[in-house]
Image (cartoon, rainbow, N blue to C red; front, side):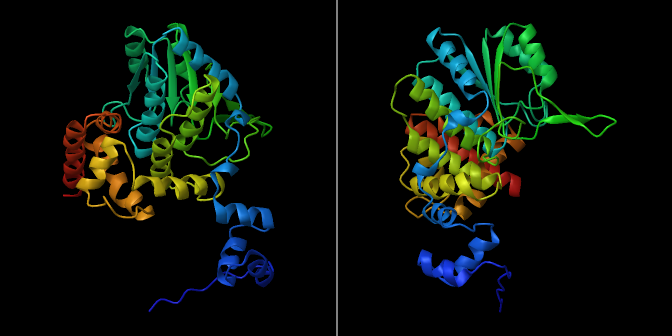
Length: 334
């Protein structure tokens, strides 16, 4: 038999419970998470999408949106450069599908885990240049790709970085830390110095969801597939094991609710083949059923297969692709 013990804290949890109309153990948990004000508590408990921050608060967000908007309008070829894990797959899916919905000439590129490893690499940058790419939009990578982004510039390509990892830095003899930010036309990363975005712990898919919304707004267009993209961001938020506070909680709580009624053919097929269809989808399903199937493609083959699944419109093809993901995950476990 397990006995749960709540960590003691100095907050008046009895008063918190009374004011918020919640049980005192819940108030104690809130206090232990550093939630001490009425506004913070209400925001946490409600997890209302209306409480999301303006994406334009990200440093370089306006620059990034303008570069991508201009590329869409001029039919400049855009490459979404993602990563092979769940966060990278979902980020790539959100951004690539958004660009296509807006009429962009877009492709996506995910590095091969075994052959290329994480992040940008020079050979891939040259390959994209040979394909006629004019703008590279990274997601879930890029903040550390100083040499590769420099090469992209020399080859005539612009780069917009969308990343959530820590920037590289150097420390001089006096202990002064200096960040090494890549020479991209726009670097959107809340963890870089000088970024005023209030929340620093979004995963890349959460950032991509917000960037996509801002991009649609810049065109004066309704945010198409916003529920679908929110559900994708929720899966990535759970699987990337980021702090489940603030915007991450809002994304996860609202996005997971949307999964059970998703209209995305690829996700519907994956839910069906994993036995989740028709059930209430929770954190367990996202982290231990859906996530591993996506990750298996990046570990055993190419994660591009997962992006193709979630951008596929034909239900029969989606079912075939989902079947391959499930089989790959079974092979990984076996």
